[in-house]
Image (cartoon, rainbow, N blue to C red; front, side, top):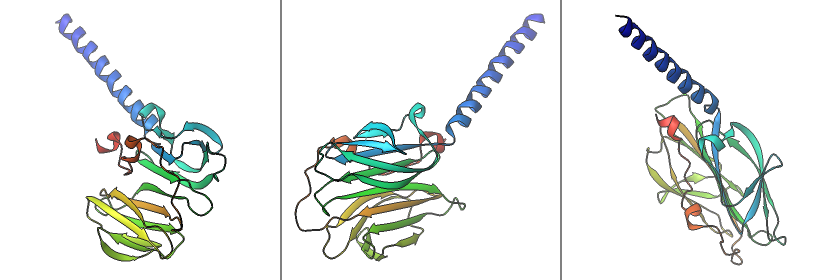
Length: 220
């Protein structure tokens, strides 16, 4: 009888310790999100003036994720003849924010910022598309859905192609996936169509991961 009681107590302590450990992990990571940054050519990445490293950069591991909140991101090309890029970004809890930039001379730079934010209605999806400059045409899977800035309700929960274009500018194409319960925001920075951009030096792997998704913890 005593052995049974001892075994029960040990099992209870182990189970309690595991529960506390899981709760601690979820608590410490629930308010963190991931950030992926790619650029061509290679750039230094600063977040609120704190140096994070060089592109391609991904703060995607659980131990490496960032506190949720609003930040100023700054990309400084190693090629000093190119102008740095600075913009506001929002890191949301347990999701990935993706920043991509292709630098060119004067108005020849282009890029995108893709982010997710949770909706109150977990059965709804939203797509917000903004562009610089504004007033660009937006095509979702080759269907014209309006001009920027544009909020599109209930795109299907699947993979999509968003194309943003305006006369006098190069068209920007972004592949996305819209998950239930989230608003996906695409900010497209269009380059003028006069000359070619600086050729890309970013790694192929970094260029292929441009769709933010809920992290593993969110899906569990």
